[in-house]
Length: 272
Image (cartoon, rainbow, N blue to C red; front, side):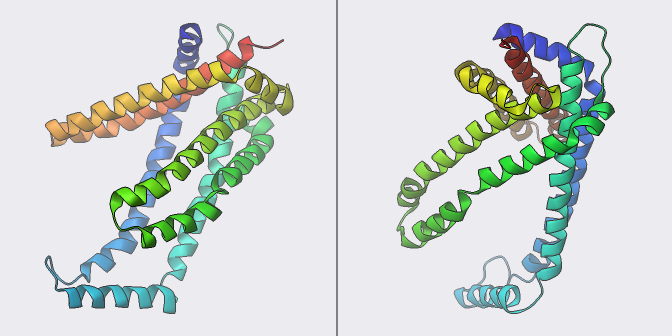
């Protein structure tokens, strides 16, 4: 495992400019999403009746908000904007992934240069198709789970009772999404290498325990760094906390690329 992580790090260092590009993409996406949510939520909150409203005033506020959301077309333009942002992300993310995956595979040899744009031109179609398929299958359980959660929320009498009814299904959904992501990633790597998605998928299934273990270790490193950053933000609030928090997004992007590079190195080491 250590060997694959070290080789993944070497590949990641070669792609620092791509890491910065992906960081800027995530930063812009987060900024526009934040501004969009703020433009929707802030006007509603400004109409909230004071810091300590009476039950009647709070109920009137909720009734008015419900009427505006469900009986008027107030929310329609916001839905279109959100749909546009979501569609843009669904188009751009697999395109960037195609360039990154192809470049990681083509630059494993010493002295080889990155091939990000070449990878986009050659492999964006299969990567986008697999990315969309993964997204659809990952969200499919929500068709049943979200109504079940709503029913549990209405029927439960306490928070522990609600968690007891929802958490097992949420855990299964998380497990399903994790396994699906790992297998889809292997198929995307196979698509950009020219090996074929099914051969790459079979290799990932055959060596799934070690493949998943490497992924979990890398995710654990990212989670640990996230906890450290959050702790620092609580201890040293102010400009220092803001700098650390913003810098962590770059580190998180670096960790994502490192994770993919380590996964790729392991899967390619198992080629027959």
